[in-house]
Every structure is written in C-alpha cells, then in structure tokens.
Image: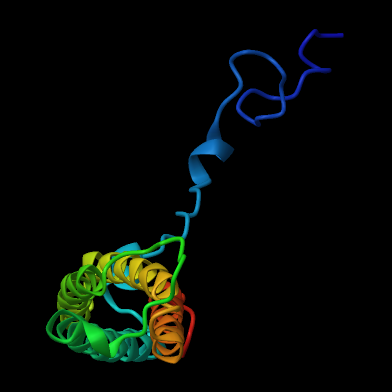
Length: 169
C-alpha cells in the first residue's frame, strides 16, 4: 500500500497541516458596521424642542422685563415695598432694587439670545433662571405673590431648556 492512499489530495482544504490553503477566508468579506450620522441629530432638533426653547425664550424675556420694572420701582420708590423686621437676608429695598435691575437685564438678554437656539444660550438660560429663582425666593417677604409667580416662570424655563432635544416627532 502506498502512503498517499489515506491522505486527502492536496488543495482540498481539509488537511490539518501548516500548508493548508486559505481559499475560504479570501471569499468572505465582512459586512460594514452601520454608522449613525451624529451631526444630523445635533443640527436638527425636533419641532417640540424648538417649541420648548421658544416658550422658554418668551418666558425669560417677560421675566427679565418684569424684574427690570421691579428693580426700577424699588430704586425709585422704596417705600412701596413693605419691609419686615428681623429678616435673615435683610438688605435695603434700594439694594434689592439694584439686584433685580441687573438680574432683569441679564435674564432679558439671555431670553433674547434663546431665539437663535444656540447651546450657550440654553446653558446660560438655565443658570440665569436658577439664579433668578433663588433671588426671588429670598425676596418673598417683600413681595410674596410676585416672587412666587417669577419662581414658577423660572422653573418652567429650566424645565423647557433641559427637556430632550431629540426623540419627539
């Protein structure tokens, strides 16, 4: 018997030797992984996100204008506000007026910048609305109802600006 009878013919790819051909590997082409276009998602927010940003811009513009008017009223006519004795954050009414005037200008400017729907405007809007809510919380003993209305507006602005930008129809 010859020694080649038990071995398969060369080139069939069934031998286990080191010189086995790689014919099957060259015919397999891997499929390319699916890629997602991330720039399209960040450039085009949903219609609902644009609506929320527009609502936040309008609310911030109104809140800023009201803070400016409140600041002017406190500076020009401090006797209009009732001052409680022994308040922990006792500041003169004129001081509160300047604080509200400056804050109102910043909130108004940030609200107007939101109409361009830029990321920096949304980030600034969240920070400024949070500061406005804190300041109005501290101002509650002077104007309770008005301060609570402004705090509610600021919370609505923060919610609208932090809502998801994608995923809605």
